[in-house]
Image 1 (cartoon, rainbow, N blue to C red):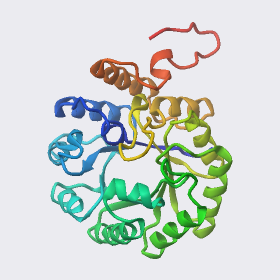
Image 2 (image 1 turned 90 degrees about the vertical axis):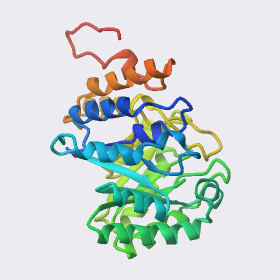
Image 3 (image 1 turned 30 degrees about the vertical axis):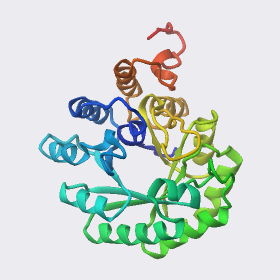
Image 4 (image 1 turned 60 degrees about the horizontal axis):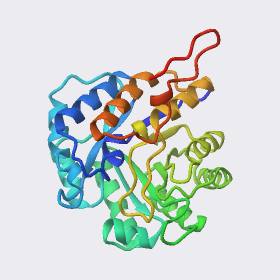
Length: 308
């Protein structure tokens, strides 16, 4: 069976849209609990202007503080960067794993980065090479890979052109991001197959949003197509603030629960992740989109169902 890897993005993609700023101490507590739960990659934040995304204002300090704390073996901390200034900040505070991306939608690119898609792709490619040359782990993503809330369906050719540009630059860890939540399972299988035809050795990740209720179905389709790394957010938090309809990420504990029912992803404690989701729901004072943190997992035969 495939080994499924979870890249937890709740601390970044999950929180960036929230108006109520989460204190650094609580973020560090969530990070520590997710690490102990066996989540192998945890995205700590993004290096963006604090006035534009106040929730991310403490990203530099979080990385510096994490460097002074005991590291859970096998756990990596990642960060998102959008531009050269963000990369500089990340290098300065010791980020080991950089995530960066360009949109296949020109409209989304301009709203998200202030740059046309082609310009953003050029800059991201150069940044990725620079981070790699500095010995850092790099993942590049194609945002709005399955559709755009402003432009509608994005031609697969645009996505494939971006992937080829990344591969030609030696950047072979690639994420396909469904920023607007427009993907459907058949489209996912088709696009993943086309990307793998470019380079079957790519380290390929998928990032789905559950805007229209298709997130888990799309993750399953990606798994069938050979993807084994998935980005998700505890509680189903999140949504890109620069897309037309912002909605949460695929929920980590729901995704892990599904995979574990299939005999996969056994290294992650879904209940421990669910506890973080419950804490986040209490902090924000509202129900979160995820399901398993409220229902509990499907009980094994012969055990009684419990309520949370």
